[in-house]
Image (cartoon, rainbow, N blue to C red):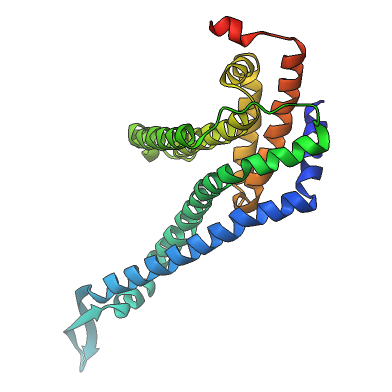
Length: 270
């Protein structure tokens, strides 16, 4: 199956009723979580502003009876008035708008992807079983995933992602390059969780290692494409299920071909 056929087969499966129903779960759960966090953050931010006070001294010069007269005014801005004062200047207003909408949008996209990946991890077996019944009835699942190694991979991926954030800090201050660098930790987390969820459900560790050694580059290219798709605003809220469908097809095809070769992994391990 070529890549175009693989993509459209996965897309067709995604729009079936069982998969669409599953796709709604991470969407609704993530929206609720983000909704609660948004209002909590907004309340915290407003409360912080209520405790902020600034004093502004301004001098005004004017001509009165042929003489230059300078008057000094003092103003105190407190709470919401502080925001109003800052926003009356075009430069400050633009900067605040940029920070709120640009950085806020990036944060929401990446955080929603983070949440959706974790939620979909619990739904992966159901998704892949649907794909198996539709296309690969004779394929036996021999998954090695369990709660213990799933939590271990999740924790390990999270820690490595955090370390990458820290190590790459100097590069965040380089214009243009920082756009790509900041995505490296998230891509690592994205790649590790997606591929673990699929492989640990349908095949043994030895089979997964063999396919990774033979086709790892191809799967990296596929995952990069999926990650770039996730950068479209809010698409990650429901498209993560499509990623499982797409990679599930790709891995099942490779797994079928591998088992047809009759490689005895137990003999290799022993």
